[in-house]
Image (cartoon, rainbow, N blue to C red; front, side):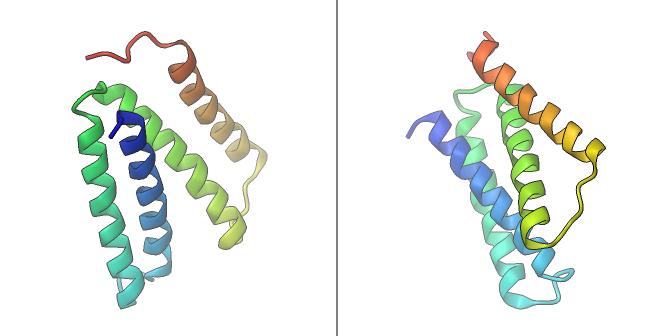
Amino acid sequence: MSQWLFLAIAILAEVFATSMLKISSGFTRLLPSACSIFGYMISFYCLSQTLKTMPVGIAYAVWSGIGIVCVSLIAWIKFGQKLDLAAIAGITLILMGVLVINLFSKSMTN
């Protein structure tokens, strides 16, 4: 499996796990709590597989950056979180940073 597929699965699992963490109400609800733990396990496993062939700084920047953007969108849509102009600007800069890394960085090899 390619490093990018592992990274994509890691990101999706982390976003799912974080969303379930919110729904778990501090680990007081069993099913969302179990889903959160399971999601983080999948995420960290896939991230560890990504790190076999991708530099940790690049992988973590992409994993966390895209995760932040996705979780923020889910929080806005599903949980009614308000995003002010500063939050939107910051999230946009994070997304731009991920794009710059992927499009222009020569650091993709170990």
